[in-house]
Amino acid sequence: MSTVDGTRNKATAAGAVVVYGATGHTGRFIVAELRRRGIATVVSGRSAAQLEALAADGGADVLVRPATVDDPASLDRALAGAAAVINAAGPFAVTGGPVVEAALRAGIPYVDVAAEIEANAAMFADHAVAAGKAEVPVVPAMAFYGGLGDLLVSAAMGERTAADEVHVAYGLSSWQPTAGTREAGAVSHERRAGRRVRFTDGALQYHDDEPAEQEWLFPEPLGRRKVIAEFTMADVVTVPSHVAVPEVRTYMAVEAARDLAGADTPAPEAVDDLGRSDQTFVVDVLVRAGGAERRATARGRDIYAVTAPLAVEAVERILSGRTRTTGVASAAAMFDAPDFLRALAPYLSVELAH
Image 1 (cartoon, rainbow, N blue to C red):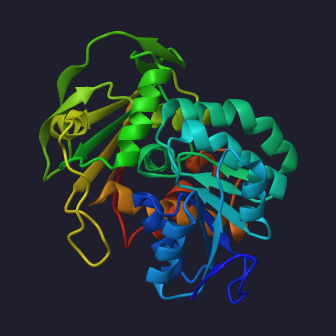
Image 2: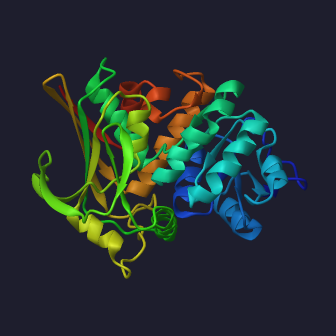
Image 3: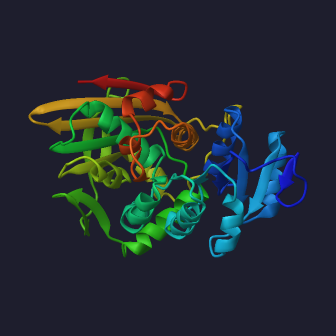
């Protein structure tokens, strides 16, 4: 039985994790992952009716707390008494600031799954002082884009804290973007005035260069594939936040980039009992440092579905004290990267080649 806070009290927020944006595509995966791990859950977002329907589908007591980002009091009510919040509601340029500010008012950890470069950069720039002063963990981009690549980079580097170059190549079999992905992309495009972005010479730089194709040699069975060079993702924010590196470049398989660009590309379609699509991926990381090359590779299925264990594992580790710092920090700055990746074994296959 689901419960709207303030009526029946079979569900309680004590020790619960709030999922803001719970009815979205990724939000539903996160709620399901919390339930699988037996973690008390509060579902939140704009629509009480959709939240009630989601909670009822789970067959377990879940607290429903509607809230909107333009109403700080509603966010405060949503987070009251909770242990942490996961923000899964994009565009994060709109939701990130209000939700993290509510988390800091409540004194609880904040995790989001933002892939928006500008929103992630703003999280570090605008909230680091307040989060550090409050000693509250804040982890942006704890997702397939931004978080996973950051963990792989740190795992590949071992004890090193600096690198000459970092390259992250995404070998997606396809990319069926959700409505939320398209909306977030439109917001980012508008914020950049249509320009593209790269991380070079130690800084984010905006430019008007046309995208170019090149080849990337993925581990087998993918092998040599065409990719869009400088298809820039959130790794250009997360990795340099704690690694001294002048160049971070990310690449996307041509087929997936075309899917994303296509106006008629359908949204993901579930093909198994977990709601995952048939999309598969390989994330291949190459780090060059001191004349040596180190590599880390992750393989899995469905970029949206795999974001759920990344975010939920992060919250579990924060709540159990398995962290390295407080304040705003990327995945690999907050957690022990190799240990974190090992915990994802049911969802990801990870290989390190030093």
